[in-house]
Amino acid sequence: MEALDKSNVKSENRVLRKEVLMAESNAFDFFDFTEEEAEEMAKEISAEGYDRDGRICMCGHPMKRHNEYSGIMSCSPTRLVCPCKKSRPVLDVSDTRVFLRKTRGPGSLHALAQGLLAAGKAGHKVEWLIEHKCDKCGVESKVSPVAVTQHGVVVDEATGYDALLCVKCREGMGIRGE
Ligand SMILES: [Zn+2]
Ligand SMILES: [Zn+2]
Ligand SMILES: [Zn+2]
Image 1 (cartoon, protein in one colour):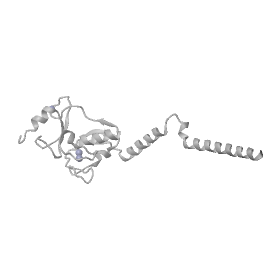
Image 2 (cartoon, helix red, strand yellow):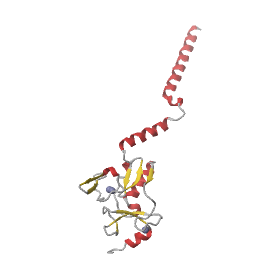
Image 3 (tube, helix red, strand yellow):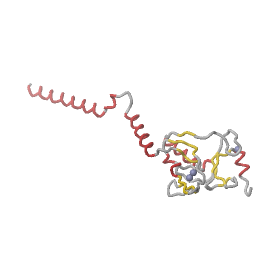
Image 4 (cartoon, protein in one colour):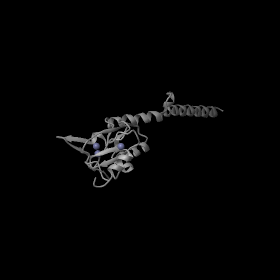
């Protein structure tokens, strides 16, 4: 009889300890927000610390990857060297690390579009810093990021000059030899 009582006490203790352990592992139950929410914030805080300047240049790369030495611009997002000649912040993002693509053509092939796509997939916050209009004619319409030559001809490879153009301006400027 006595032995039975002892084992009861033992198992009660075990239950009690288990409850304490449970309470320890779920300490966040004390709060009216979840551990996942705190985790999200931790990520944002560390991303901000890493990327204090969240601005993205029109070339599709972080502003902080640009340097200017005696009037000459350089942009090196990774090993890749971008010919960017005039930095222009167009986006503000919560994490710049996905904006490291290479421009392989106009529109969806442009580094800015590919970076934006990656940011969306990763769930990053993105905000446009510029007005929604064509850089050439000023019409308020949907636009495409394009690489252009110094004379404004749309080309497939990064030239160091990028613009957001409406469809009409893209077609007008796209004529070879213009
Ligand atoms: Zn740039
Ligand atoms: Zn660049
Ligand atoms: Zn236009």
